[in-house]
Length: 159
Image (cartoon, rainbow, N blue to C red; front, side, top):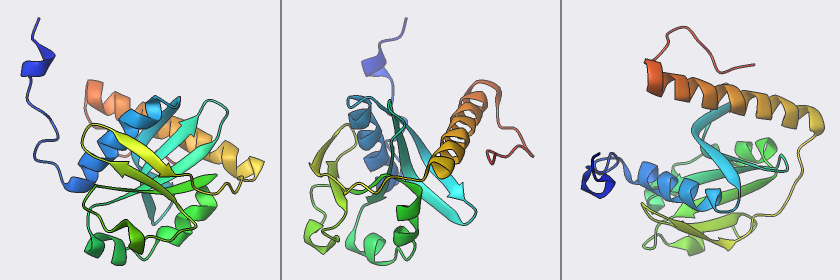
């Protein structure tokens, strides 16, 4: 069997946001959250990471690799209605003081992360939670299917 340490890093040439997302996902698994990346809670809105906790709690994490990446994001406030807690994930060089204080903050790198500030809780309505968990499950299942069997055309993760 091949030595995993000898395998090339599949994200070595990935954009910085994708590498931050990997570190965030690894960290959240340690908090008993499962994650999906590039989740679409509704048409026109794509979050970098959506995390689902054992108790059904839903967190949204937006990964920002630079000041310009943050200042060009005009949609982030629309993410708040699709989660119980919202976080920014940034690297160690990011000027964290420009991020809104009323949001969560995660310091991340390619391999791990640390929650520096917990995002305030705003519980989702039960009907929205149910719909999001369903969409999350379909999104995750389709991603797994794509990895194992190739991409399916014409299949939507929408409920």
